[in-house]
Length: 315
Ligand SMILES: NC(=O)c1ccc[n+]([C@@H]2O[C@H](COP(=O)([O-])OP(=O)(O)OC[C@H]3O[C@@H](n4cnc5c(N)ncnc54)[C@H](O)[C@@H]3O)[C@@H](O)[C@H]2O)c1
Image (cartoon, rainbow, N blue to C red; front, side, top):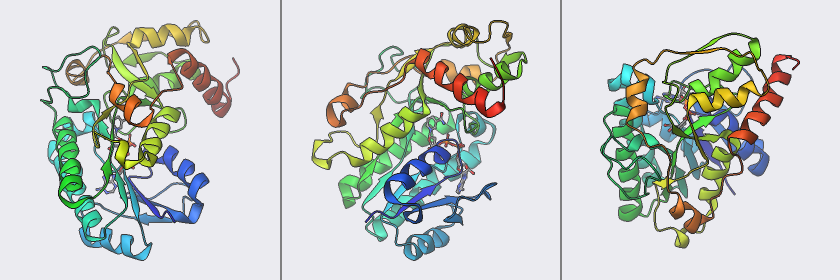
């Protein structure tokens, strides 16, 4: 039976992944762990700092955990503002997770990587899965380290660590935690409140993006893929859609025609400029059947429908 711990389970992806996993494996079998307190009842919940290895061991033991979805992390923009914290949480924290996985012979550990693993020398269009990895952000460095450590634990100890390189993840029911693609989430809230949005990236900055349901599908279907089919393990490119802020604005204006946007790029532009525009995800397609369900049009339609209802806005 699956007993799952989701670290960073209160975050943008965790708050969507946990209901999905609970639906599949039962509420009591999916434990949310996070360093902050929940605002709603998400029990079973444990307050957990992944840098505290003893507490981590206690949780694994007490709840008889066999699988970890390791989502606790400091994201790209926040990481550039506090690189020391990003190093500690993303590298030392992951090391604790892997060590606990080895000590307790866990069945599987899912660790998302990111397109931040790439850098300025990486080919920007249709970026190959296996290519130059020379990121210049602490977040990106931590993601490459994570991919390599995961592979190391698999080859040396047989610990089954897997992960996808997420692009920017867009959701309507959870706010992002400090990444470079956060504009693509915030923008919908401004549009629906009838307020002008000031975008922190240039209007023509094309980046790969993914709608939350596809993000959940990617990580959970990789988790279930037969091990013998996998050639890659911790570093799968997954492509869904690519667009620039101006493309998203144009699509939103089909629903909210007088939506106003101004572009004032800040320090996040430099991070975005070092990332790819689109990804070659043929390894994920071939090895575990990856295919996204949403493109930008269908995503915008779905977000406007759900978020307007949630915010009580009539269009
Ligand atoms: N959201 C995206 O667009 C995106 C894109 C690429 C990769 N990813 C990756 O997906 C994973 C999840 O991202 P997310 O968007 O949900 O992040 P998030 O910032 O929304 O959530 C991270 C969670 O981790 C918790 N956390 C931070 N430090 C902790 C610690 N020391 N111990 C325990 N919990 C701690 C935070 O409280 C937060 O709830 C991360 O590995 C991230 O790098 C996300």
